[in-house]
Image (cartoon, rainbow over all chains, first blue to last red; front, top):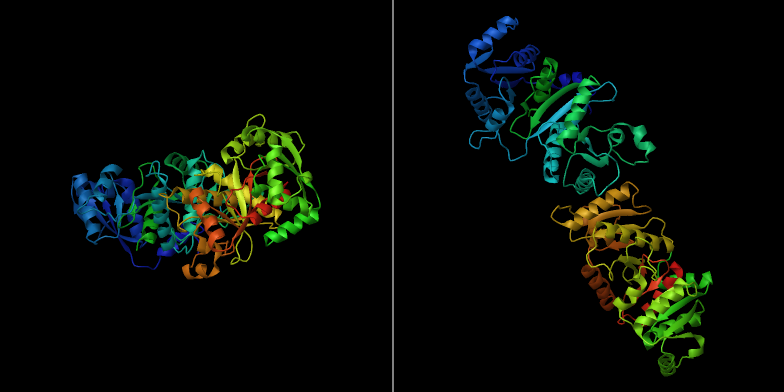
Length: 300
Length: 300
């Protein structure tokens, strides 16, 4: 099964048990807006940790009705993150979301050795895009977290993402390892890593997906383009997941899709005990809502 | 498709083209006997470069009429090597062969930048066809003689030479197994990294006309039963035509072991030269030496 658009993501969680989402440093208008909408849509049960007074002020200013929502008052933002993370590690919540706090502080808490959400896996960013010009949603990793992943990191990033896609209903997601060209070129490390990842996939060292690469962006998403180049590949033209060579390429692609292609985007952090919604302030409320949706669908 | 060395010899006899072979320092009985057999079968003419008196003496001892050879006088092995190479370069011979001269001295003449026979920017390597009674066809191996530790570029060149040779034997799309100790890709094993890259190059038609897989151990490459037991999926399917080895120290004992313990015979040739170059070790059987000469005619 593949997801055609974000509505399909909604369908995945409809009717299921509502996930408990804990919003850390909850006194943040955009996050609250998205969380309350997801709550009203029966996707999640929110727990708000933060400055209670400020939370109420924001809600009344924006006409958010939060009657019945559990609030844990902690005016100190950093402490509120600690409380939220501990709720997740003690299994009182299924999803962690970042409110009005820097990403670095939140991640430091996530990685806390005693009460954090470590699994031994690398943390990586996973984004899902809905673009009118592609036949289905396309996942992209890593556009925001790992700067210059080594082969070892790339394996972990693929595993995180494939695990997530498997949970979204993709049995064998098609993974394209992106390069500037589809040929192997000794001077382009991305193409060499791509070859190694393909082989590891063939040998079942990376499971539950079909990997091919290097593929240039056009070959990865356009069958016509792949055929023109004479590429024989199960993945080319029908990619479910694009693996970026590094954060520069990933971030530019991400922003081009959003700004030029008007893509809808949902994104989460993978590799921790639970999905983490870690959207940036510049993300729209819609993007935050879709990210919550994605986290709920990807949550165990 | 040629399945035995005898079939190869027949093919050479059918071509009915007489090739002229210049032999450097052709004074030993080993060389002269092999050459003599090929001359008598009618597919070569031999120019023996060396001391005529010595050549005649050896011929007499072996009961061979020295008049069937063209003799060119030379007073030492280095000059004899240069002269034999010159004869080929000048078009007076088609093939050059090493006699009783050290391989390094002989190859120095072949590799001379101005007077030698190297193709520009080519990798000098060695491919041989092994006939092993317990294998159902010829097995080409590379490189058991020239490159001690091939790097990626050299491995690619070795693969291309072996494919080209196998094609001359009528195998349109030879199956080439890249040999390692295990079939897994590990970034700690440089050869498995190179092999994975090569497989992708074959996928992308950067290495043409072959079915390539590796790393594979020899069981997986040449034995269908092992394939089933291990459950490894590979297009080589236990039916390899070519084995590419990671080093001279793995390939050389492999073929010598087969010669000694499994009644193997071989025909081998230097690759990367404008014209065929025959180098044989003194310990090879006379039959193998004869087959080397026949092979050089097939490849000329």
